[in-house]
Image (cartoon, rainbow, N blue to C red; front, side):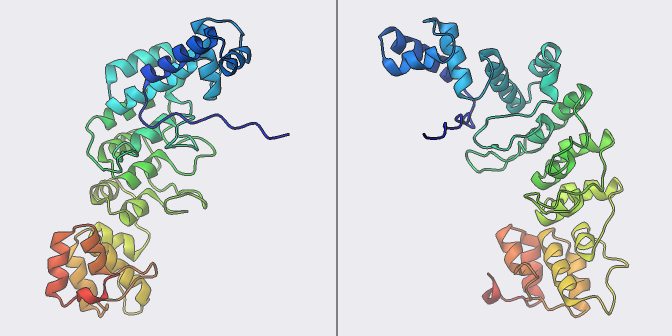
Length: 310
């Protein structure tokens, strides 16, 4: 006997109209005595009604009811559009929607809290395009006011601030910091970004300079030469006995964040300009990949060679 199949995931582009059409098509087929359609309705109420067809569709997507499925789709549409008026109405009617995990989405199969989802909005999971989306900070504030936990919930692999840092959302990060987010909280050891690292480390690794600057200005603890290089000030971090790997990692970070003075300090201290860091990255190749024009020009002027790029 085979195992029952798991419910399908909702598409990343939410469309309530399409789900309504699925229910209407199911009802039409059932009324035409289609055996598969009749079986799908029999699995819920067995009635040949639109309400029964909608319930069947909802159950097949893993939701207990059509209103719950409808609310989930509407929530994502509202968050995507950063519509504060509609969000206020939704949360007034269903306050739990500020905290309940967003579930059954194809591009977030592990689920995400609304606050963390907002912190990811800069990246379009369908097109793979990054963009600046004004209004995420205001939405984050509304969710926090409605009861969302500023540092996430038990079991989360990272805090919302770490997520905002990874995705480079300054607005969301500032809203979280203003609400008292733990600046030095670390991701879980099995997190998908930078395991065990702080928001500052994530912003540094992923090249989110504006968030690096915000975190440092807000008092985030700098924990390494690499983080100091990303922040643009390595005072007290570079010593004669600083390991070469640390120096090279710092050089790569300085190049990625266009900290030209730090590049000079590291090179003047004997850091090899074309060396690879422990992750196999070189300063010029990273600057080129991420279009850090100022760093590219500066590194070439200091003697970096393109032939060593990976």
